[in-house]
Length: 211
Image (tube, rainbow, N blue to C red):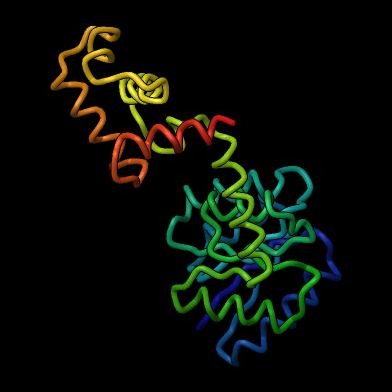
């Protein structure tokens, strides 16, 4: 028996979703909840296999409720269904642990495809939303400080800064109070982290990223 919980505050929408989910097969059992508290009560009572969650709930919003579900019921996948399908929203909920995202502008077939994919262990995003989420992640990454983007330590970041000024290892060592051997280790780590082949390319990339 497949048990699916739909958390949606609008009764007509919820009832429509519960009817749609019957298309997953005769062994599908559906439950409906209008808010977070009611959903928690149902989840605590039985073995729910999946949650379909609307982001725009009254009281505890879906974006706030999703982390609660992931923490309290970590084995139950959550598929988000929302009219908010902008890049930032999609990216945030997927990072928060959603197993899938379906826009309310989509069709019943889209929802069923998403649920089937998630039930098979996949992470589901329609192609258009996947592209939007990727763009959002790229934009966020580009807005981060250079050291954070490449996972550099504070010491490596200082060495990279001096590399962009054209300093030699000896000069960097003197300015930072390090040995040349330590500077070489930092430079090697920087080259590896940035995915370049030498110090000149690292310095050039850093200079371009700061513009």
